[in-house]
Length: 441
Image: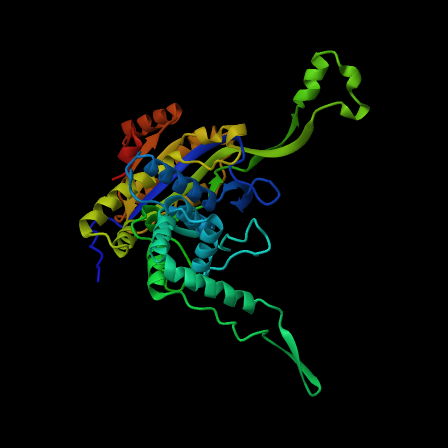
């Protein structure tokens, strides 16, 4: 039985960030409109925690897989509905299986494990699980290796499974007894053969979190398979919101038809029909601008618990936890949701201010901005918000011995001037950092 080593430092790393977005749409609702909340009596633009978490998780995964950053070459996870297809592809590519046989076997194995699949009559979803499954990226390869190693046994099992399933799905026949009519199964073959125990154990092992660092960080919930472990995430992420009243516009756009324009340039206007005038396509898109407050917290003890539960040694757990914390900070600062990234270049956004500190519990400073900033009276929102956030942190740390002064980083020259002024006045409780790496304790 593994035990989690006692973490002697402060349990939580709290991160707070201000960033300014101009004419972008990082996240939208089902109607394509910006998401919003009402706070402090006014409507604020909002970027959901879900979009933030995905952006940060994928950012870290891509860096690790490319050999970059603190988690370089660590195992990472993939969240997808395509594990049957991934397994089938490995069977075909690595073991020269026929594609159709590979798909049928992989789907049957995962279905017998407890996962539900899409409508078999729809090709687009027939081999996709109904839920997203977050598992180590090599899970498909591991399942394929086991299936191939036990191909004879599983070929016989798959044949029996598919036959029983086909019988079970036949229309029920009617049976009349006296004045009543009931339905009964067409055959008694409705019970599907159980997955062989060694195969079930191997697939559960492949899908288990194991040493996938991002599963330990972000957690996962899998209700479909009772004996597959769920993971309580170590990262808490809040919705981001503007520190002032929301600002958005409905931007009218017109897309040109290249062929029509080329024709006009070559004096072939006589080919134009009356309804062929104007732009090729027109429409509206909503865009937002504003300075957002973001918050996230890392539970260092939960992270170590998750890593130890995955089977890591105490030494490996500590090394992985330290690396994961560094990458968490980097992703929080650098990652950005990619919606409309080409048409707005919003992913190039750098934070105005980042504050990091440790505590015995997570702390959010959202209430600091319950009173919306008014740029007419308070000046530029980012600058006013930076002053307010740092003043609030100094006020709270003077009253809470369970919070460290922390570290502060800026990429804004005007806010750098504010930090310099506060430092000279002795009013800055946090230590100034000049790199993302310095933000991690």
